[in-house]
Amino acid sequence: MCNLYNVTPTRDAVLQLTKAFRDRAGWNEASFDVYPGYQAPIVRVAEDGQREIARATWGCRRHRPM
Image 1 (cartoon, rainbow, N blue to C red):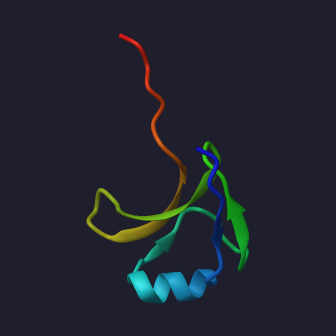
Image 2: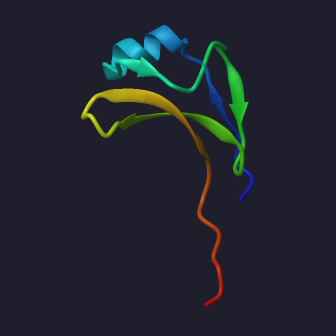
């Protein structure tokens, strides 16, 4: 799998759209490419129940033999 995704909305637009309260990703770029195996910003629900932007590795999980 070699897909390319591009994040085009600004940080503020994503915060407003998702109603996230925090940015733990340090995301300041308006546009950048996202490749499998690299980190990208995601919106998740934190342990305290608040939405936040965080970084996570993007892509499919690798199959590991048992």
